[in-house]
Length: 120
Image 1: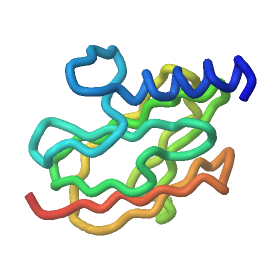
Image 2: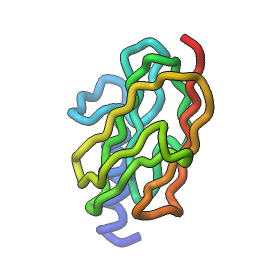
Image 3: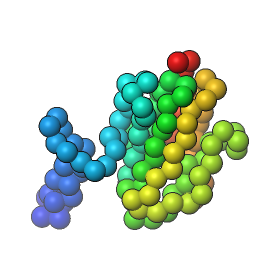
Image 4: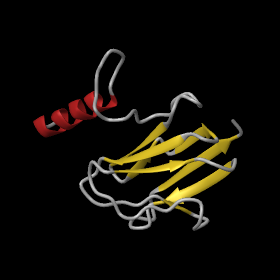
């Protein structure tokens, strides 16, 4: 593996975090419902995690870690829709009505995610 590959792998490992590490980035996995929020990273043209389940009333934050703009757009066209946002920027949505909502990046429609909202 090239030095660049090792460096990139090391950065990915560091960005993922571990117990006891401090980061200014939100976690990239689900948090406990009712814990104040959950986060989705946009990394390498993918939503991470691709599926997230949260309780109604939870605020979900998508953080763009790519160096191109992305959107977060519910397939139904009404539940949530961000404008394009760049690297380091976020989009937030507070989950309301329970259900399962598929979403995409409207700029890169091959990017798919699913948000499942459960009763509190």
